[in-house]
Amino acid sequence: MSAGTAPEELTIDQLAAAVGLTVRTVRSYTTRGLLPPPRLRGRTGLYGREHLARLHVLREMLDAGYTLSAAEQVLAVAPTGVSGPGLDVYRALLNPWQEEDPELVEADVLAARMGVDLDAGRLAQLTDLGLVRVLPDGRLELPRPSLVRAGLQLSSLGIGMDDVLATQAVLDRHAKAMAQACVDLFRSTVWGPFEAAGQPEEGWPAVRDAFQRALPLASQSVLVTFRQALADQIARAVAEAAAGRAGAAEPNP
Image (tube, rainbow, N blue to C red):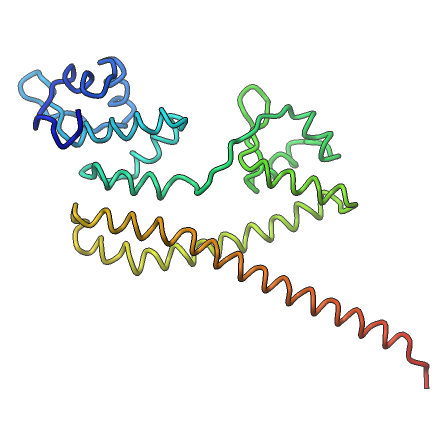
């Protein structure tokens, strides 16, 4: 049963049956705040299309492999009255583009690969950079394993791990600034007018389309800009090195 064909109000049994969940599961989602409280008619809780739409999005995310915490994040920030296409937009906004599958690794294994001691200070540094998460059982989760592998490859070239991590901190800081500039542009040109109009239901597809089209364009712009800046800096460094050699070769007057 879709949100568009559902009755205006459902009991919890009808709601659970419509989505293919147990009543106990629906109650647990309500307790966690994933669903707004039902409207009470006497002692009976009544659920509407908004509840049905949220449960559909929640189940789709869980079936796609998202954790309950990730789904909870989407539903927690979406306004109570948003359903259907609106929830799809919030899901797209909050889920990283082309997200990597995290990897699990034992702390001693990662320490051996990095060639450093993973003491509390080092773990805090890696956590701040978003490279690791310390799990309750002591293992480490690598949210961006390709970035960790790149760092290890740089280290294998003879670059010290401290220098690798220091450079990553600089890249991370500037990447966040570039991302903020892109988000500010989207908010001022797309989201701002939509919000000022009261977030009309018919406007959600246009917002979603704008975001889905803008994201790869923003990523491409950042990549091209960085490549050009890197080429310029390499050319400058080569010219400075050449000038230094030429100056050293000149005879003293």
